[in-house]
Length: 289
Image (cartoon, rainbow, N blue to C red; front, side):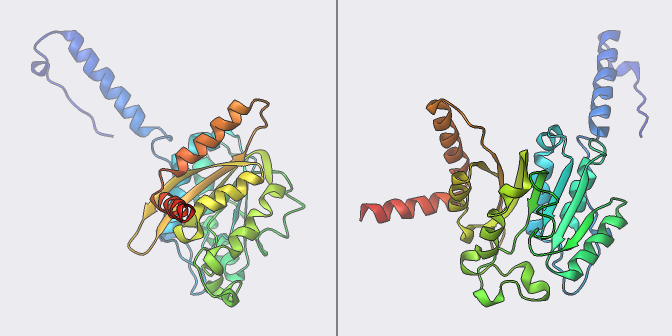
């Protein structure tokens, strides 16, 4: 903390200006020091690694950034159970645990991965940061589905989304972390089929998707399952265009007007995504033919 000495010559008008100046300094100081403005996330140097485990990369950072941007809503949910499907190095679930640590100390964190090396790496990463995560080696969440049925308040997913030959899906080692089969959707669609059984009434889902995965279609699929959605964050790199889709259970409404508002809102959110717009334009062109 720096101590600032102010000379009265700096304020020739009156003493009230001096008082106002110090009040402003105090406001700035407390704002900058508040946990809300300085959230903790996992430190890369403390993230454990293994040759067969996916390391934190652009998609991992994007997902954590989306959680940071929406942390007020997450905290307001008072989450009791959080789960990451496909935890890899443990960077994301550890970051989520750190973000919530001061506000929701009672929250329990779970993580799953089909790669046994990833479960060990996640355990080490969380231990390095002083947080506890229960890690299970399982396919998606099959070993936890009954135990955590309808109880997950925050579900985070960085799935294998890269389009690959189908025989690579579920392969041993690090390949399983990115191999997504046709359109990169094989594992994504399997995950989306079980989230209804996992998510609590007010639960939130944050999932990474690639442009080739057709995020618009993913949102439509989830809409049919009773979920609302929005693009929480998007980012383009030299190699790919990524987004984080946020899902939540839609509340049943009795008025068609409210349903129309929800649909309009969904289209508005998706309209902000360049690659979704391009997909819509292609569809319109095909219809006109």
